[in-house]
Image (cartoon, rainbow, N blue to C red):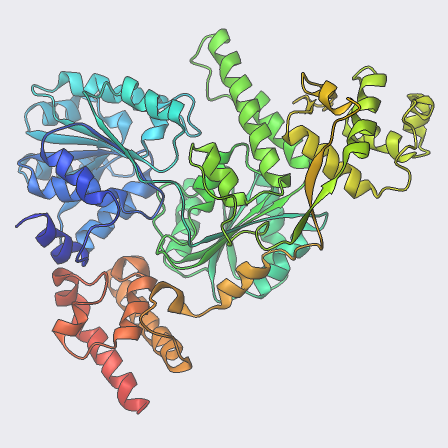
Length: 619
């Protein structure tokens, strides 16, 4: 069987996507490979298909237990023998799996990096034919990555102990050029082909909402998406407890996840979400890596993450099936202080010397600044993210809150001069609130105690709304005319470009909204849209919506029988295609995207019967 036969039989697809085939061919030629592919682009197929064609065992290095369990469950459901070796197994289970591996039962084995250099695993690996080592979530190897794992440094040590060097492949969804170079250097890849398919995921809507009542905004959002599955990320455990408690009190079916819970409760809550017993989970960043739940329709952030990499990875857990999904960030300026505290108290880099820790801290602060700018830019949000990863677009995606807001170019030179002049005349000693209150002419005790009521720019913008002054100050920060220190005080400082603002002939132009955009406006419309968006060959009617619910109920019934998450049986995208094709025979069912030979033999007749019954009942 060739790569196309495996693709259809086990995974149910007729053709490869994007760069999948090139990456697979390169691996099959015995060459090291790096694949940078967005979430949902099919990275796992790029090493799973070669693993089934190569003569030997493929070891997949994976950072989290949940990721391994999910991937292995999917492979076994597709008819591919696979196993994982990690700390979730009992001693007896571990040795049983290892014995089966020695017998050659598994062409693919997922293993935690910590296990690589243990005596038992090394003995197995040295005496087996390891054809490939595939490093998943490869950004974890870089100390500049957002999820650095020191245990990933053991990979090279392990490979050097093997009697023959295998092919080494590495895959990740989020990596700047610096992290990509780190992956190649640290894993000691030999003349690797590096293929970046792009970071864009066009099915995701991006939005930023600023406001004081974040809980109220999220509650309103959830009330209009009650049938959908979604994730709410919070910065701290305390926030998780607070938001989850309030949502339960307000009648929502929701669970929680953070590192402060017991292992048993985390496992149960995660399973409740993955198995669709609970549609909503409130969590910290401890949740999500490796979760392959394909029908997450929205990811909301109650607070700003500390960098773009983390945000894009967390937001990317929405819409993995390619269907429309929404990613909305609810921002407050207090989030900057919270994240700065997290950076200051970071204990993950204690193994490095003081100089390296300082460099890492400074880079974390720079990444926090760029994340902050994302929250108040008026440019296309998608374009801002893509530029961060080195891609450049048209600055209009048509699927983010900024692109749905009407802007007009406005001359804000006089406001900018007042702000820069105030910072300069006060000798760069105060934070944003004091500067804004001064130019606005506030009569507060703080302004008087600082004697800022005597500043030459005091009250010069008295007629200007405070929110507009703040928008211009943020614009000056975003464009490098002012700088705010990343400490508890947030002092506004001048930059080399500040002098340009004060020149007589200077002109500062910025885009300002003609009207306030409503959060998730277009995204909510997308969320309510039927499944037709993904397949242009048909249009979903009310009958097909009903059929979709019938198929989803059957899928849930089968999932409970098999004790697997529903999306492992068939994804929402596959059910959507069934509703449009309405297959009556095996041949027609095999044309549905995601239906392979193995899964048809297991489930095909039941789904055909369900579609037939529905069709008869509806004329």
